Length: 119
Image (cartoon, rainbow, N blue to C red):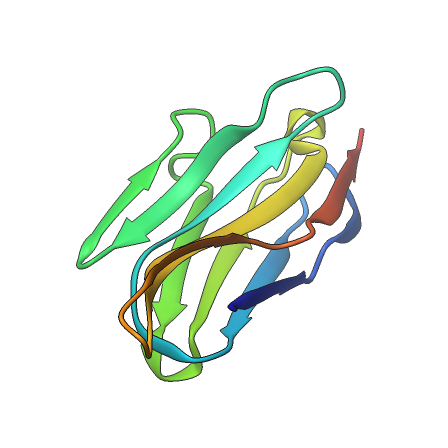
């Protein structure tokens, strides 16, 4: 079983910055896509940023403000968020996909971390 834990959320004023971290643990043999998703109250969960191989993909609403990066040696993925806006307020979830040491695929989610941006 693969566990995923996020950290780094909090309260920040509009225009501020936050860095989210996500670490996966367990018998992981390889990781493929890693990504950040968010869900605001009353809205569906949406993709924010995904990194797979050497490619990244961002939601239009965060392009040029957010940067996703991964550290394979640490089974970790990060989201640097700049120029935050009140509409970025949401619970942010980390998703990790890959294969375990037994060759089984996994698709694991963290519990989420709250990001609140005040105006």
